[in-house]
Amino acid sequence: MKFSNTLIHWYLQNKRDLPWRNQTNPYFIWLSEIMLQQTRVAQGLPYFLSFTKAFPTVFDLANAHEEQVLKLWQGLGYYSRARNLHQTAKHIAYEFNGEFPKTSKDLLQLKGIGEYTAAAIASFAYNENVPVVDGNVFRVLARYFDIDTDIASASAKKEFTQIAQQLLPIGQANLFNQAIMEFGALQCVPKNPDCNICIFNDSCLALQNKKVGLLPVKLKKTKVTSRFFNYLVFLDENDDSIITKRTQKGIWQNLYEFPLLETESAIADENIISSIQKQDFVSNKITAIHLYNSESIVHKLSHQHLNIKFWKVKVEGKIQNGINWKSIEKMPFPIVIHNFISSQ
DNA sequence: AAGACGGGGGT
DNA sequence: ACCCCAGTCTT
View 1 (spheres, rainbow, N blue to C red):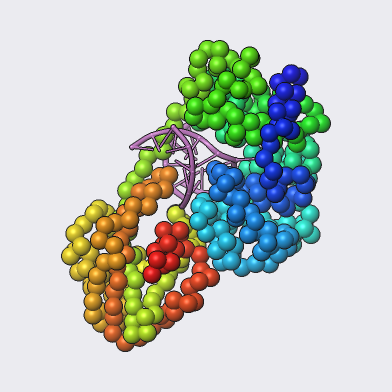
View 2: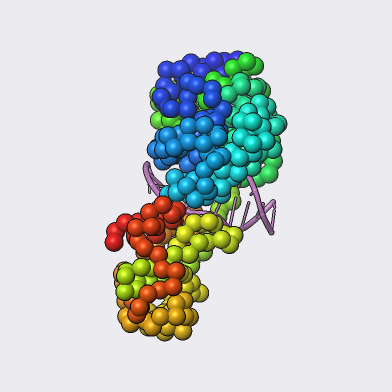
């Protein structure tokens, strides 16, 4: 096949040197794949290095406390990945004696491993002939074949998987899959790709039809909701404070935060103050309340805009179960809270 | 089938 | 402001 030969040739000359490449340890490949879900290589790379240093084997990861895993994951986002990673590490270590499943089908049974990741691990570690279909593959194939199927639709995954399967050269799944993704990441980029220097500029249908900028088609748009968070940073006579754990479903599950007063809308600061006084988070008498940041910090997630204010709440005496600032160093926080703490 | 789930970087 | 990133899980 001309397409795959050209692509693989390009890959061997242009690939980045990344620490999870040029080896077939399924543990490292799995770790990198989970970290890179919806995440750029540049962002995930330092996390991969700190994880492999802290947990050189799947047993080390399995034996860790979830809190340590989440702490190392802090700032990477989509924390269910870290929780599932830990759960799956325990499963592999204790149920499978540390042996990873060796087929895409069996890998798919594990928590946090979906169709893409199962195919990625199976092809990279065991060279199984299964195609990967990620955002890069959608884009490269949609353009090369001028396909305007909505990639967010249910049928798109099947359609593109079938095309990729046909293109995949048997016995070279490892190379081909990495090549097509690398090509999407480096050459066939989402915005303004430089088609003048593209290896496929004599055969790409989107280029011929002047549709490169229009493909792939993605219709679904996530709508963003606004929320209003007031974090209460209590301080007693020892400067001890209160930290709580987010155990409910939703954003930041199992991460820590200050006691939270969420309001339906942006209400006046005086109303927040009277609310704080009524809520009795602590039995101590409150002696002073004031804002750290008069302007809300707007923390933008893909689906929520969090308008955050941090309040200093001074109280008399000692807080029951107060926590020393030194002891929160090992606790995982949402990055916006971690940044606030670091700035103090 | 649609929505929830983070954070950062590019345009 | 909007889009995208080596997606998966839940509803």
